[in-house]
Amino acid sequence: MNFLCLDEMISKALRSLSKWRGARAKLWEYTITHTKLTLRVESPSMSGNLHIVCGGCTYIRGPFAWHDNDFVVRRMPGECGQDTEWECRGNRPPP
Image (cartoon, rainbow, N blue to C red; front, top):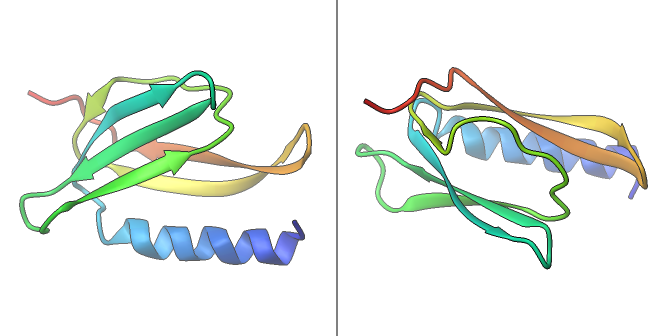
């Protein structure tokens, strides 16, 4: 995948995620055989929910659930060329 394509995908992801800024997020599922991590984002002001599915997940650190999410996605050098790194800032634990 070229850098422009990856940058465009990151830009689209950030636009979608911005609609859910400040919502609750939680670790929803991890499938070890596919190294697939799913995060679920919910907000009382939005109908439905958002599932963020990360394939090829190799590392995670943080709480299982948090409020006030603010996801950041960036391109990082990886083992196979370019990977993406997801970070959630403002991850206040639920009461």
